[in-house]
Length: 188
Image 1 (cartoon, rainbow, N blue to C red):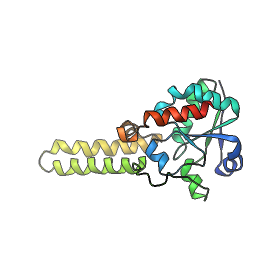
Image 2 (image 1 turned 45 degrees about the vertical axis):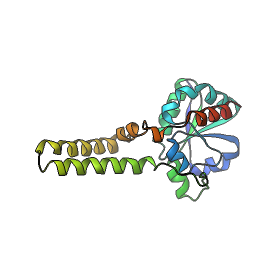
Image 3 (image 1 turned 90 degrees about the horizontal axis):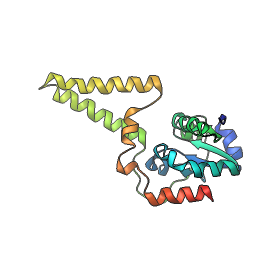
Image 4 (image 1 turned 30 degrees about the vertical axis):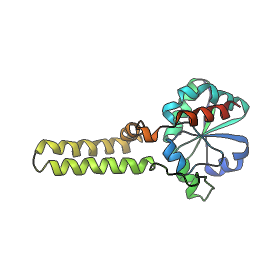
C-alpha cells in the first residue's frame, strides 16, 4: 500500500512546478477557484480515473486538493489502497487562498455555487420548510430536527452527507468531454 503525506500550502506552493495537482471537488467548486494547473477529477469519478492518476503519479508527485482537506484525504486513502502515492494539501483551497496564493478561475463562465453554499441553501430551506409546515402538521417539524441532527453529525465526523447528495446533481457533474480531456491530460 502506498503512503499518504500532507503538504502545507507553503510546501505545495514551493513544489507546484513539479507536482501534478488534482482537485477532487465538484466542477462548480473547481470553477470557483483552483490551484494553478490543477486538473478536476471529482471524488465520485476517482475510480474511473485510477489509470490516469497512476500514470500521473508515476511521472512525479501527485497532490490532491479539495476545499478543506477532508475529501482529498479520503481520495488519498483510496489511491493508497491501489498503491498510488499521493499527497494532500493541508487545509485545502481554503487555506491556500487565505494565505494569498494564486488561484485560477475560468473567464466569463457561469459556474454553479460552491458546495458549502449549496449545502447552506438546502439545509436552510429544509429547516424553514419543516418549521413552516410544522405550524399545520407537527410531524413536519421532524424535517427540521433531521437536518439539524445531520449538521451536528457532519461537524462531528467532518463529513457531509448533504454535500455527497448535492454532488450527484447534474449541475455538479463534469461534462463527459471535460472529464475525458482531463484524463487524457493526466495520462499524457
